[in-house]
Image 1 (cartoon, one colour):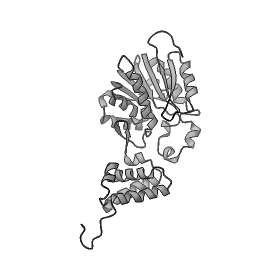
Image 2 (cartoon, helix red, strand yellow):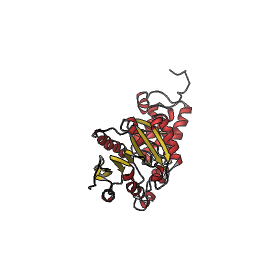
Image 3 (tube, rainbow, N blue to C red):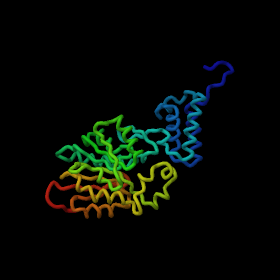
Image 4 (cartoon, rainbow, N blue to C red):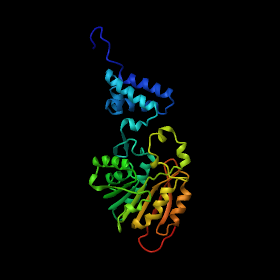
Length: 303
């Protein structure tokens, strides 16, 4: 009970969420109800479930100021994940900010594709290579889910490598080796160094597509992680052209690709004589999304 004549400290959490939901809806944001809960939770240092479950608690003025700042940032177009400061990726919770690409659900599905291959092998994966690691999501997921024992993570961006190192410090730092790499990638690999598994979520948006992306992506996520050149395949070509020399016999490469790139990426993989069993797999929406190829245990190649 409040003292006689004293006004309550402020709206309840539930009332605050409802007000923010209306504001986000008017601004044209999708999933306004979900975002409202997450913004309040981020500003108050809570989980979204706590905002709902303890909705009758009143918000103090200082808390309301923090919430208003978070809402203001979202209305200005900043990604929700950057405001929260973290992103959930499968079983991991990682720091997320403008130094690297925000992980997408399709990349989580890429780990599923890799997991099916690893679990179908009669040998474990000792060493994996993560090309363009960004925030570290792929490589750290391989370690977290025991799909590889050691990961070498490459990125051309010093800022991304810094973010990946921060995330690895909370996960599996000793098994996660971060290296800088040039645009041509392969000079980062030591002579005679090989891997049973190579994974990558490379930049695959065309330069024209990048210019037309929504501001929430174009203005806040690093172009270097998105723009794959005129046809979106610059980095994918570099990977395909060199991956056969670093894969161990019986190893495989897994790439995330654009939904319209399946036929051309498949052609590139089949043209590489050191690779076999090239194929394109679809995401949960039924779109071409993942390219896979293997290195034979011995003998010649076949497409």
